[in-house]
Image 1: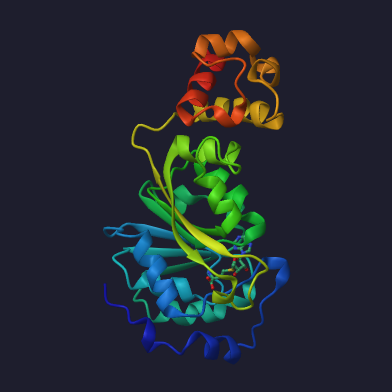
Image 2: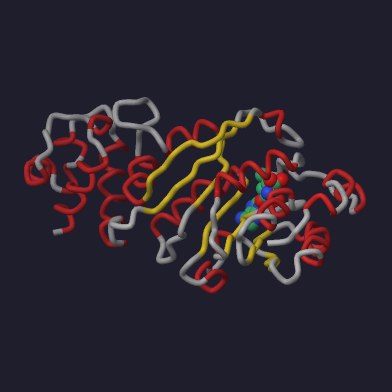
Length: 275
Ligand code: SAM
């Protein structure tokens, strides 16, 4: 689709022209290098003419790169109203492909914004990154794909394998619903202003045969109990949801600990607990 990001004023100039400074309370760390945002957009695609929802566009560096892809439409949700006029300039150059929504992404109705075929791409505000991911993993609206920036430590937890130190609730739920991969690492200096820690981009592709919402809800309960007391044996940590009998029914060793159980094992425990 024809959109030339480089034809717009450089992002730094656009920020200066609008007198905009990053605000800590909104978790603002900007990507101003178009080479970096283009790489993220490439890792997120292809979109085959479908809609992309971008949470927290800020000055719109990633937005510009997304408009250069084969996305049919890009819908941006930004909580900080100061950025709307700047984003409107991008929309004016985008021939109707960019829709700007001012508001809180935690409350957004993605189905209304993107229909059933929507992708999510975002350099997420760190303070709301995990709640947003949980919303998209467990909510009624399932994205076609998600390509999301997190603090490196959170990205590693999302993709962690059993037995590793980061393996826990978030990884089990994410990997039950999606195939999850860390696709890019970014040092703190890639952002303006730089955050305290390194970041990484995770790509999540929902499994076509993924668990139904009721099973995901059960998985949330089982993993909360198991990892809430991760040093205890499952027969004890899972007592409130079925204990030893539950483990036996699911074919899981009741003397094992949560970190030893793979995603398939947790799904069996969740299915038995439900039934
Ligand atoms: N995407 C831009 C970039 O890469 O340069 C900005 C990323 S910055 C880390 C996060 C952005 O999310 C900020 O623009 C911030 O105002 C916005 N934001 C924070 N909380 C939000 C929320 N709950 N809903 C929507 N946007 C939010």
